[in-house]
Length: 306
Image (cartoon, rainbow, N blue to C red):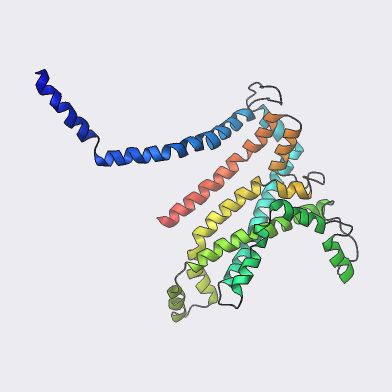
């Protein structure tokens, strides 16, 4: 009996480890290092930051679990309310302006114009420039004494008085928005331009034959062709703008009087005061809003695919 049972074990093992399953195991083996890297460099720091937000941890101290105490404290401060409002205003206004500028320039460059390749490369310079250099340059332009903007306004007679662009509450946020739009519109421009160039020209010819005017061709042909790119670009730009630190810090450091205070700068101030738990709570407070943006964008993309 034992001798007759032994030869049957090998065929069973062979039938289980088929060529298809071997390919699946090989694929899992290739993906495993990437999964380990994601878990170690993304998932662990992300989850640990959430845990720290619920503690009173400080520099040199492990801290204790305090639940929602950090969030209740932040909700009662005026600077946190200012950070919420300023972050929303910064993200919404800059995204709208970058959309309008990027879309307009993409539609222009998509036409058969002489020298459009050079013009396209020129428009990418703000995005290619390091953010540190770009915003320091804008800080010099905004200086009340010797700044480029004030020199243009005063010497041309447009406005005879010197404006402290970054030192007044009325002009600080618009100044940050202007610099952020200048730095970020090339990303919208190149993304929309790539989507425009993927739209078949036959659709425009068919629309012209049907008597559609320029606005109708844009709404019925161009917009559906770039809709998904606009959704993804809006999502990425909103996340980048909400998490960006250098544009506000290099220009205003959140001032004057919290007029430009945003979440990343507020979290940085929490780190400076060595209150790690409160700083982490500021960062974690952004997660629900960003998660909602991701869910909305994903559902819209899924709807388009369906």
